[in-house]
Length: 169
Image (tube, rainbow, N blue to C red; front, side, top):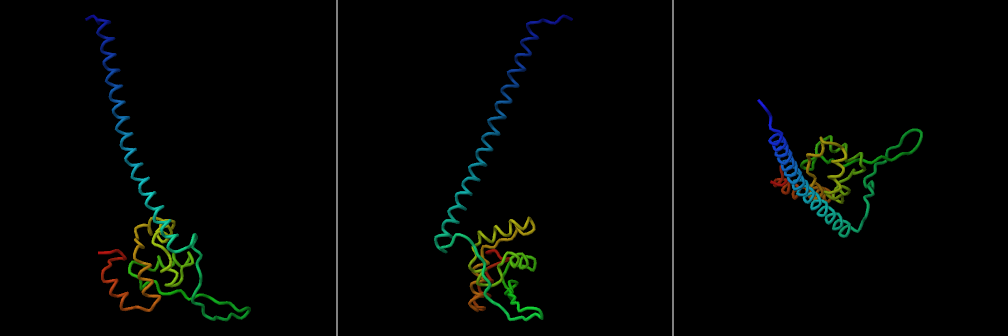
């Protein structure tokens, strides 16, 4: 059996052409998918920037500086020291004991502070704390805290009937 050099080179050329077409098609598809994902990410970033700008304008603040509102007078033998008594955030639908600890570590100790903290900031705190906390949705925590700080317990309970695990039904 003899090989025809012309047909061998023709076959190699056909294979190379097909490989080039397949590689080009794959590259174009991947580029289209990546561009679509980048567009979605940029859109979300733009929306978050707009929310942050709106928050800064409506709350007239640029950074969150926690304050301690409730202070109890606890005297220790060597020196006088006051400690804050944190509010019971467990009354807020969607907040559990570990989240209370996290918020307290971040300096959010009172209903007033929680009510004055945006859902975006709370999401940032949860995100920074790790995946265990990232599944929580703090969107409705400030509103609930607002009812609690004003002692509007009936309104808080009524509002919570529309929430499940801190999320709107």
